[in-house]
Image (cartoon, helix red, strand yellow):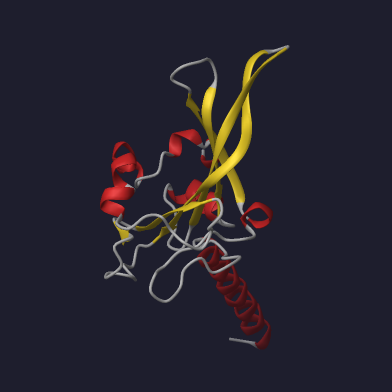
Length: 187
């Protein structure tokens, strides 16, 4: 092989390796902040509204009057949305933050409309395909699970995900415990 051929092959290999590294990096969302300690205790990332990707919102209907009683807005750690669109699943390390708001409902020119009002708290999920916290009762079924009241973003109210989290997520078991149908940006 002459020098020119060797040079061309070297450039091609370097380019292929660069593309492979970029694709591998895209499989894992970038972490803007660490949301777990060594024992697996979670907290709400302080920068999620600036750095995370908005996935969508849910309205929880009021039982007694027109409109919503709650609105939940969901954010995903950087890179999670693109990885999901490519593979159909959230990669290990993905962080989902769901804000839980009380809703206010008013009559507007377009009709009865509900909007976010007072923030009540957050739900935080961390994708865990490696079972990295087997002794922690808030980790299992492929996720770390926690809920936080608005005044305590570092102190979870959940004690065992089997009792505190999984019952609400059981209908979404087929989609890895996440209600993905509410997030058009994942399609």
